Amino acid sequence: MEKEKEKTEENKEKKEWEYNLNVEKSIIIGFILLAISVVLGSYIIANSISNIKIYVSSSSSSNQLQAYLQTLPQVPLPNISNIDPVYGNPSNVNVVVYEFSDYACPYCDRFHLQTFPQIRQNYIDNGKIAWVYINFPLYEIHPYANLTSQYLTCVYTLYGFNTWDQFANWTWYNQMQGVSWNTLPSQQDVYREFNKKAQSLGLDVNKIESCVNSSKYYNQIDNELKYYRDTYGIGGTPTFIVVVKTSSITFQAVQQVNNVLNQLKQYGLSPSVYTTEDYKYIMFEFAGALPYNLFNSILQPLVSS
Image (cartoon, rainbow, N blue to C red):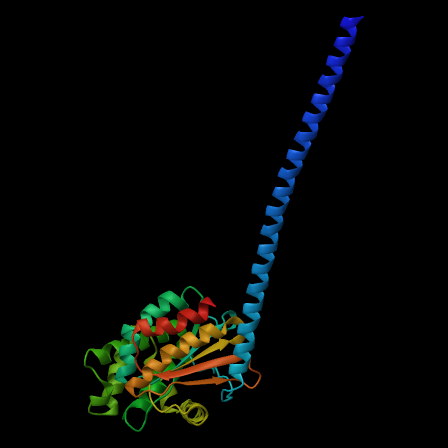
């Protein structure tokens, strides 16, 4: 009897010990789960706060941009007409660059030979921007600006972009090699040089000459020139207007571009910034055969926003 009583007591103590052990385990596990919950909760809350901060920052930038746009002069968007060669697709991008250029201008030639190929490779060919070439002949200082502008326009309208691109690059290259159209003795000499190139490309010279002699595009080119002078104050070549959708950029990107453009003032250049009446676009205007690194500093923030 005594042994059975002792055994019963031992079993009771054993059960109590196991119960206490289970309770302690439960408490420990409970604390562990609580700690995990706290850590996870803190992480979620921290992430939420981070997201709120980002949202507020973005909203703040948008408000700053809208406030800045309201301080700018308002002008209409540049046009793209049937005589303006276009690189890329302006409908599919947020940034479109308009180049106002004279085929007889040596600075325009330098830009197209030294700077433009890199822009084309790094920004146009990969669909980041589009580029519009607008004929802006400076009749007052280039004696054959009228002929060269109409000849190249006829090549473009008769044979399309790729043929025009070949022909235009030939004119820029020749100018940089010292064959300046401005120094040739007569208009007939310019015609002769252009016709030789046209024949080498398999083009119908008589068809081109007929187009040029009819002055078919003279009034259109001249009217566009006057319009851009009056609207944007363009007076020299090359001049550029970079048009950007305001919905695609931040105020910080605008500040970056303005900082770059302000550097041009030390060289006597006067960049301008405009917006449209509905504030949907911002336009940066500047002039000069600028090097690629400067163009890159302007375009990079605008396509990366």
